[in-house]
Image (tube, rainbow, N blue to C red):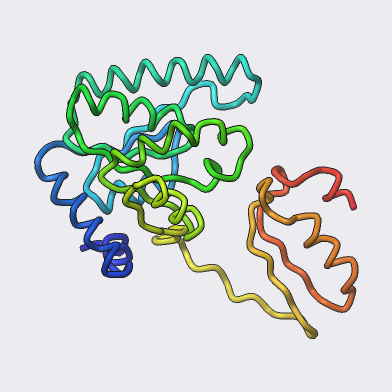
Length: 232
């Protein structure tokens, strides 16, 4: 058993039963993990744990215009449908978001009668651009073998829709250990984040300003940080 599988087996007992169910279902046919990105470490890690083949669909990923997004989603929808028609997997793991991928998998499951598992990132629930899909997505969650979310708040929401759901946070398995950090004198405060829209970045920076004797460390890529806050 590899390190990833061992880590997943350390989840609570109720969660283990669902993971075992996925592994047993996978034995009845081929299993794949579909992701609409050029690459995802989380998808790769989960795919390896469940013995699924990771399959990535990445088109026109460099731009963010509405037209480019529409073309990208259209092409990936066609490619995904073609892939499922040709390969007829017995179990499909799917990354959510964007929501169009799990919706395609959900609809085709009626035709091909495969089982599927949804791995949901927090953006589905937190980003305004995807909230329109929640009334529709609840049916996809309800039909799924089970789904994976990253926190208990989203777990309770999916359960309220009638879905089977387990919590699995960030996966850091296999990463190289970093060098020890020399802590400076005085109090320190570390904020773990990614500068996502649902994170209190402005409040954190205001706390930094008001506590000049504290050392603040904030994780995340500056490319994703609001420019007006970084310039402060």
